[in-house]
Length: 467
Image: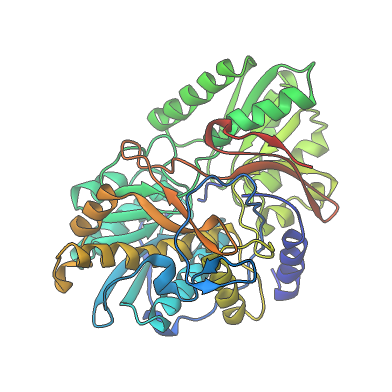
């Protein structure tokens, strides 16, 4: 994608009114980067999140505003930093989709990390030295190799995507006590409760389903049946996800029409699945695939004349391009967004957007960049808590140390929620290690504009129709 094309899509997305995904590896391709001079990556799409549905608690502030309330002015204040960690250096791993069909994710996540690293240094925090590994857009073997190399280097802190490379890295993550934040795919259903592994965004499509089903029943009261096209992650993982889906369909009073088509990650030809869909077409088709995949599917489904109401799980420039114009005719999706141009950005979100734009030729960040920025600065927040608890400096960048702090207090500062004077926070369930609250919604992109239909939280909490 050219920079001009990227900025055009970013602008289109940023002016929408949508409110607050899954992202998504035979060897491992590795790159190194010393954090304070990280190169700017290609500008990614701006996404949108309204804070109307946000239910998170908020942090204290320090700058007086016209309304008489106060707002923090430095990252230190936003994170509640109490200690001087400027002499601390921490080596952090990042296992991302740097090549393959999901390389869009690796670029935008890296851009978010870079902004976080530089913001920490500017605020007088520790030096975070990121070393990158490539899971090749969901190749489990590459992820396993990355873990072996990372552990051999003594790195016990990492950021991850694709639910720790579609589950293949989870065992080594727990075994080797590598504290991990996954802001790309969260925990999914199959990664819940794994020691040292924490998902920091909503699970898609599962967390969105109660809200999606409520919207569907209100919008199409005479329609009842639901089917799925999704990614094939292997028998055990597929069963966990399907069982949760079936329970939510039943709870909503809808009917599963027995259509549950699974395709390889990064598939490009959906002819076989489309043939089965046409033979058993549901009223509602959940398109639970990611990256370029949903755009490719939508284009082929439109050509085949599929009439089902389709609801996807994300909206990205890769998908727009892969759809070859199909999404311009209408693409409905449900997940959590980040609105880089919202007038109600909380102070940490505003600091992030300004830093991202300055590093990326005025470009605006998307949801994935926002998630990896906040996870980067959260490492400082957890290290500071450990220092306050009496942990020595040479033990702060340590998987056991950060896991202990996360377990003691799973509430962290966030670019989501809050208000112009209050930093948002998000909390995590100590059993599942997934977020316990998250603003989400259902939207439609058409002819260059995103329109919000409804906002809701996990489990459909606070469901509110837009407008």
